[in-house]
Each structure stands twice: as C-alpha cells, then as structure tokens.
Image (cartoon, helix red, strand yellow):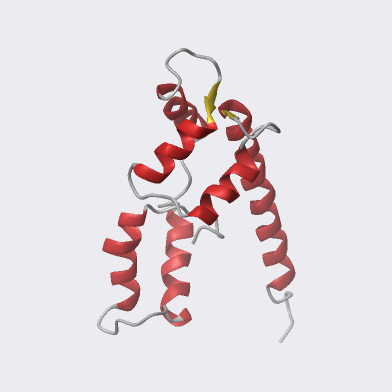
Amino acid sequence: MRYLLQFPSEAQVRDYIIDQLEGDEPSDYIKFEKFEPFMLNVLMTNEYEPNPPEHLLAAFRVLDPEGKGYIRMDVMEELLTTKGIPLRTKEIESFKNFAVDKTGQYLFYEDYVSKLVEENERHKEFLIKDYENFKPQAGAK
C-alpha cells in the first residue's frame, strides 16, 4: 500500500485492512484477487493519503520548542525506537540515509519534509507513467 502512496497506520493495517482482505480465510499472505478491488477503492477514496506537509512540520515543531529548525538525530532516534510502534534497525538506517544532514547529527525538518514531498511526487509520476504504459491501448485486443 505504501508503494502506491497510501499510508495507513500500523493499527489500521492490523485491525481493519488485514481483516477485510483475509475475511474467513486467514493466511500469511493476501490474495491479489482480494487486494486489487480493495486497493482500487482505497485509491479512489484517498482514504490513506499521506498527511499534508503542514501537519508534518507542525509535529516536528512540537519536538523543537526552541525553534532551531532541526532536531538532533540521537533525540530523534530515541523517539523512533521507544515511542509508539518502534522502528526496526533497518528502518532507522533508511530514515537516517534519507533525512539526516551530512554530519549525521541533525534532522533539518523543513528540508526533510520538502524532500519527502518531492520524492512522493516523483514516485506518483512514475506510477502514473508506468500505468499508462501498462494499460491496454484503445482498440487493442
């Protein structure tokens, strides 16, 4: 779902989405026949679109009461591994590679949010282009 730029919470995945997709047939995987119509509906309703950039910036500003424009990475890593649903080591490393400055010490959150928005837009354009190339041409059988 995240590949398709839909971002449900872990609780939504666990408590609602998996139940909807598995129904009476719990298993370790989701069948495409069930996923496709569910996902098409999600995409049409924009039910799990990412939060707008302003919400992300507001959340970061709560963590930066002095208004410095950055959060120390050691503080951010502590929050990401001990609060809410903790990120795994691989997720932390991926986050650091994407978000942290060259020194590895600071997360300049306005830059991070801007980069995140740009990356999502680039990915959305890729998905649309890929879909346009994939869908059958008019009149083709």
